[in-house]
Length: 244
Length: 196
Image (spheres, each protein chain N blue to C red):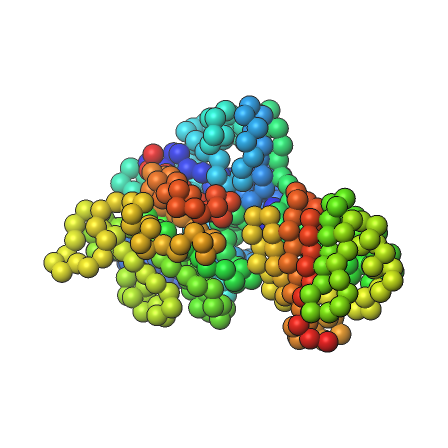
């Protein structure tokens, strides 16, 4: 929260990759075991730094995909023209070492102390911090009502597919597939729209808190429509990770 | 390619510069006056630096450039940075109340209300008090004899609700506070006792 930021030094540390899980053709979840790591908040991110042989350094932020208290993990999707993600998704192996620092972020975070309804909107790998929120809800015993609308290109691009399918029944999960749909698909089709949100998201009258994460155009469109539907702008929290 | 992101990505950089995570702080644009959380600002990261712009008017608010290992910071476009959110006001309110219980001086608590602020009780016949003088009088006449601690709180834009317990029985729900804020002051505080 604003004004309560805790002063501390944020130091880079070298940590070992514990395991790598291939989530989709382009996304992996990387387990990490930093020695000095205060418990993170659901929704926070960490910074990863890669150093090339010639000393060139590149840094990127990755959302933490695990819940507070769980072993630390990030989910990374390969961007073909990216500087960092191609290495993390195709070269990195368990046992390798990478540099990171964190946890970081005080805005795009959810706490079980907030008992009101929560609307989660994910575009592509924007699901990662929302997965941390969903797992935190489960592990903390929170009964905050939650709904998730997840936009992906195809069903094979859906990250955490099995996990999302096994969420408790009181978490409503909807999907929209923008590029191709399997035969018999009963979910939404096409890019997220005002009409889709009107049917899949909490009504504004419930005063939901919204978390929207994905590529910039997705976030811009989705957040604007939520506000149009009557969501209070202050309660629509956004995180954009490029794409524009 | 991820060259244009938002202020969430500034978290680490702002900790480097200010020693605190400021992504939830409010940034006020010096050009158009819009106040927005740092997290929603537009961030461009084309080498050699990071440029932060207002999402409303596109004015440059902050520039960070590293030259020869030294980080240069330019904040001239900002009219302001940081202002407390509802949770902070709620915490300060509880702190002031508890300080009043310990010292007998509730002036810090009274000072948290707007001039025509109101304190009301539900479920006990204490009534309601409007204005700082009336609220100060209520604390003077019937000073609470125990400090409180929050059990859970639900903070929204300009209001907050919190369940609390008396410190002598810290696990037991004692009541609920509903607060309406005006900036960093309390416009109305309603206390609902749930049990004795």
